Image (tube, rainbow, N blue to C red; front, side, top):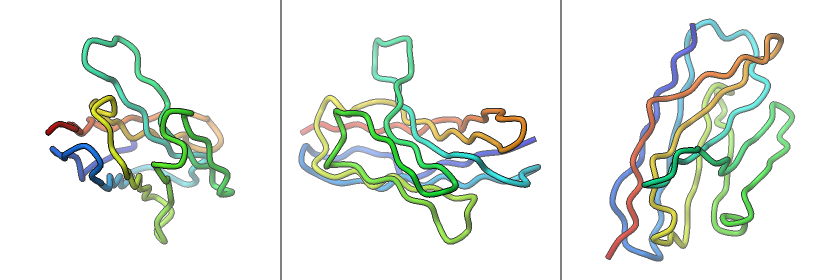
Length: 118
């Protein structure tokens, strides 16, 4: 089993910044990709915010390009999401996701709330 622990969410004013962290542990031999998804209030589906592969390739939602940056830690089982210039529409529960190499199984964190409001 794989466990993901997220941290860093909270309440921030528009224009502010937050940094989310996610650490994976458990039966992980190799990670194919790590990413962040979010589910906004009233929406049923989670949307991809940003993802990064083991090779360092990144992918961002158009709505966050230029404001958010995803990165891996020195311990390759960690991933960060630096969020700058936050907007009220960024308010959501943010979920960390890991795709394990080989089986390409996905594992999810419990989610962390990000609220952007004045």
